[in-house]
Image (tube, rainbow, N blue to C red; front, side, top):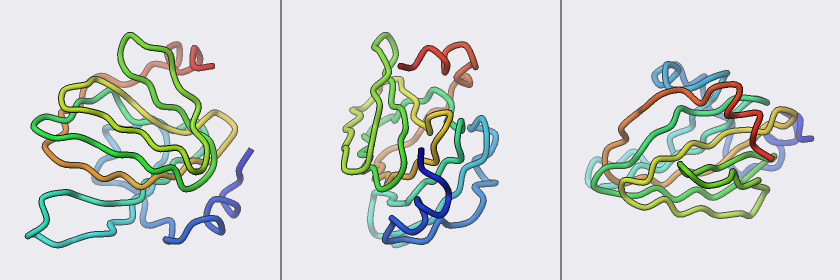
Length: 136
């Protein structure tokens, strides 16, 4: 189980601010640190940190992709119709255009990843507690 201090100390980048702008797309508290803010670069790069039990809604990336580079704690990644994958530091995920998925912390651990995203996210329904607890 990774505590907040372990995740903060294990990362190159600071935890960032409370992710209020996207809070409606998350169950629980997340934090966001933008890492690249250049309008001439057509990808967004940011570190997202999740408190234990926090996860984002099901979503898809339209006309793009998402790469996740796990930098702290333990988390979950799940594509629609597939079992959840447990993630740890050093794991990487490639999500292709149009693939419905979610990601977030395990119930007992903080979780952080760098997200490299191209295209437009389409936010969908929340991951229910029942769906979340099926992750193994």
